[in-house]
Image (tube, rainbow, N blue to C red):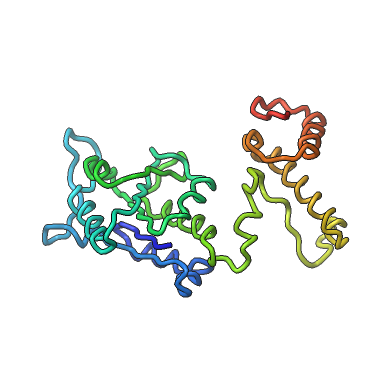
Length: 254
């Protein structure tokens, strides 16, 4: 997987991504991260890439020329036009399903805007996907790009040392991850659940699945509508819903 980030702050994304698991994957050559400074494509001596918006209004808007030129030079180097993800609160909210889809790409371009955004003509010419990490506004697209790259990279083969870790965690089968414990067996009067000490793998798996269902019901009941559950698990969900007198309309139990 090759990431290309069009940004005004290349040092920000490089320093943030070249650490921990992602940094080690870069060192091994499993993924690559290329930060392209849009300001390098400014056509004036002051390297200005923004200007006042037509029609008036507060703030500045990034000009289309430097944005398009930076992308088109990348296309010439790659000999193709890779998918361009524009970081914007107006976009579709990024999730694990989108991450799995994007992890299949060979190259991904992340376009990071600043100020009041980017001239609409540049977006019309190069952007293929508008994505958001939530319904709030940040100062730029760099942090959302870093979040998405971290998430997508975990699904790229060879990035994680334990392949199972990529999927058997939060949002697997549309359920939140079960509680995790480590040594010591007792901490401040709280003990590790006995089933986890039993060595009985089938019982442990059943306990973990049930805890995932319970936690999802407590924290993200909206996910349960699309959760992948066995008949026994559906019955378990029905029982705990009855105990808690669930009223959420979006929980559908067959």
